[in-house]
Structures are given as C-alpha cells and as structure tokens.
Image 1: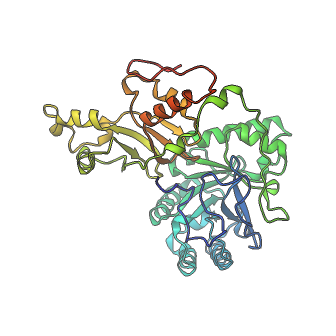
Image 2: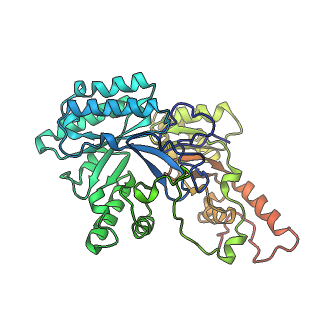
Image 3: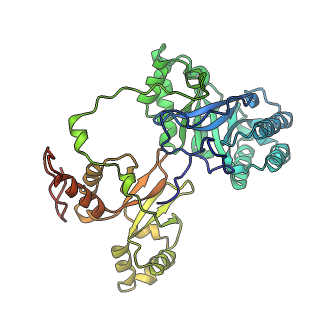
Length: 414
C-alpha cells in the first residue's frame, strides 16, 4: 500500500505520539496532545476526521498594513519560534503583497529562517494578504511564481473583504483560498453575507484551490461550512480542550439500512498507483508499461498529484502499436490517448465503487483511482477485487438484502 499523501508534504519525521501532518483519516480527536504550548499558533482542522493537519502562525498575521521587508523579519522569527518548540506540523504564514512586490531580496529573512530551522519551503503555505495597485500586478505574479518555484505553496487570503480582484484566483493559481475572518463572523446571522461566503467558497474550488474557513466560533457556522463542502477550518470552536486534544463537533448521521450492505471501503483494497506527470509523452508511458508487465494502468497527475487522466494498458498499447501509431503519438503528450479518470474517495464502499465502474460499459474493468480528501491520488483499486469482495458478502450465512448482479461488459450497474 502506498504512503498516504498529505495536504502539505510531510515535515521532518515527527516523534512518537506527535500528530502526523497528514490529511488522511486519524481518529475523531487529535492523536496526541496538540502542541498547544506553542505560542502564537492555532490548529487547522480537517472537519470530517477531526485531525489537525497544519498550524497557522497567528503571531505573523500582519493584515493589510504590511510594510514589506520588516514584516518578513517578523515571519522569520515566527518560523524559528515555532520550530524551536518542536511543532513539526506544516505552517501557514500570512505574507503581505507588498513584500512579494518588493522582490526576492525582501524575502531573504524568511528563506534564511527556514534554512536555520531545518524546514523545507514545501512545508509552508504563504497566505497572500493586502491589496495592490493594478500596475503592480505583473510584479506580484512574477514574485509568486518565484516563490512557487522554490517550493512554497501559495494561498490567497481575506476573500470577501480584501481589495483583491477575483481574477487573481485565475492568474495566481493558488493552492489554498482563505475566506475573510470578518465575513465568516457574520455567517449564520446575515443571510447576504452567508450567501457571499458560500459563493466565494464555490468559486475558489472551481478555480482549483482548496478552501480554508477561519474564525469558526459557533456550531451554526460549522454547519454552514460543512454544507458548502469545505473541509478545512480553524477558530475558537476548534481549539484544544483541557486534555490538549481538538474535538470537532461531528454531525450525527443516522445510518441508512441500505448503507449497512455496501461492504468495506475501497481503501482496504488499495494498490500502489503508477503515475506520470500529465505532460508526459506517449513514449514515456510506453517505457513505463514495458518495464513491468503487471502494470494495468498509468494515472496522469498534475503538480499536486491530482489525477487528470488514465491510460489503460490494453487500449493504450493497441493505439501505439497500430499502423503509424508511434509516429502519430510517440512524441506527443500521452494525455491525447488518455481516458477520463474514474476517481472514488477512499471512504467509498465497495458496492458504490462498482456502481461507478458500471457507468461506462466500455470501461467496466478499468482500474479506479482512489483519492484522498483533497483530491490527490492515493492508489488504484481493481474492479476484480471488488467483485470478489461483494461475492463473498453474498455467500455469507444470513446475508440479506438484494443481490448485486455480476459485473459484465455491457451491464450497467443499478
């Protein structure tokens, strides 16, 4: 089974009992005392699992009044202080737009602080805050590209109240979008602002960013955030209790009778996925398939490991081996021959996954890509394994409920 992916790439190996920086499936409470003794940080929580997946450095929250270089020095001190406390979770830091526009020299203190602390840029999310003049847009985007090239993950903050044009979500391609804390404070009380926050969350997701909702202080806000489909939140409602653990008020869902017959989750059948960058050529895909006869599929992924295309071994090699196939496709992107990815969340029950497989009669037995909570590829599941599991369930003594027809080519599952 492949190693689980993370919201952020893992930081330095955590000591025993410390929380992993994974956005996977920990227990409903933080699996060990949160480093709550760390000054000036607040936990960012996965609402579905209750796991803490990062820490936001509140001490570096500089708002819109940042002056540039001096503020970066404050961020550098924050990184050193948090790292000195052995808090190995990824960090979310606020970065004034003015500091990015000023050029790479203004950010030198932050780079040096990471080097001293032993942290890597890919363990840091930099939240862009503060407005900017239209004539500074080109310098801002160039600075963000430079930070992204170093390895930092980029976020846009204060959506809803900051003087930031919405099209920055398209131009900057942020990894994370943070709604305004001021806007979130009115959610559940002001219908207009609630509608605005919901629409901004949907806009950010459609633009390819994950969404973080700050300042969650009431259960009504938490219910609204869940209704929008947002997974990441932080605020007074999600702080460590006396035990040092974070307890997320989880909604009570009555199990449906039919849900009891859907079988185990697909993550129990997870196999390592063979992946290639989405820009890989058909020749590279041929080499991958040729290197190991047992490979049944190759998943094409983007820079965040999210599946964007699927190459079935038989169909792909048949296309390449056809007359003029290699000449036509060999040096072109393999995505030209890829099928749309059939992805299922890791918590999908076996029978539900088979229903996904049966939607396309021509691809019933194609591998299913299994994704984590933020849409990244964890591995694959073979439909044959699911069929064997379901058949075993039906043969169990006392099994009740409707039997599922065997999956065959040309059969659409109910």
